[in-house]
Length: 209
Image 1 (spheres, helix red, strand yellow):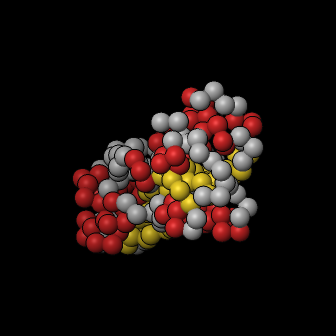
Image 2: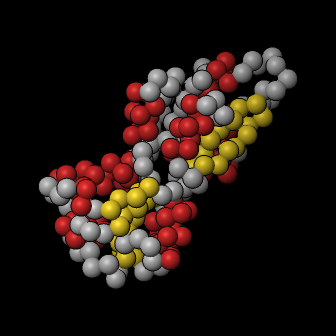
Image 3: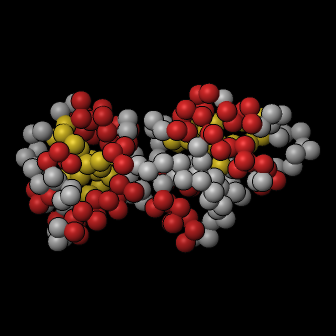
C-alpha cells in the first residue's frame, strides 16, 4: 500500500512511480481509490479540475470522502483506499504503527485553516478560562495536539478541561445544540461555528500565542 500526501499539480510526477502499488496496469480493473477530506484546500481544486483523471488516462479514479484524517488513516490501514491526504500527526501515528506509507508531498501548511473557536457566551477570554469547560476536538488529529500543547505551554492541567472526541459534523451539531463551549476544528466547520455565535480563540489569545 502506498500513501501520498499530495497536491494535484504534482500528481503526474508522483503517481507514475507508484502506479504498481495501486494495481496491475495490465489488469481490467485499473482503479485508483483516492480518499479526500471535505475541507477547502488544494486537493479540492485538483479534484474539481480533474487533474488526476487527466494525468492517469486509462485509469478509473474513484474519490472516497472522509470527515477527518483519522478516517483516511484507517482506510489506508485497511487497504480500502490507495491514496489519501492526512495531517502530519496522523502520518506519524501511522508510521509508528507500521503502516506502509510513502510520503512524497506536503500539500500545505495549515495555518489559519484550523483554530479553537469558542462560544461568545462561554466567558472564555484566555487559555485559563478553558478550565471546567467542554471543548471538542477530533482525537488523533493535529487539533487535539495543538490544544494539548497550548494547555501545556500555559501550565494548565489538561485533566481540568473536559476534552471530548468529535468529528467535525458532530461537533457542529453539538455546537448548535449548546452542548459544548468550544471546538478546535478546521474549515469549513470552523467558519460555520464562528457564524453561529462563535469567536476564533486566537482573537482572544485563548491559545496562549
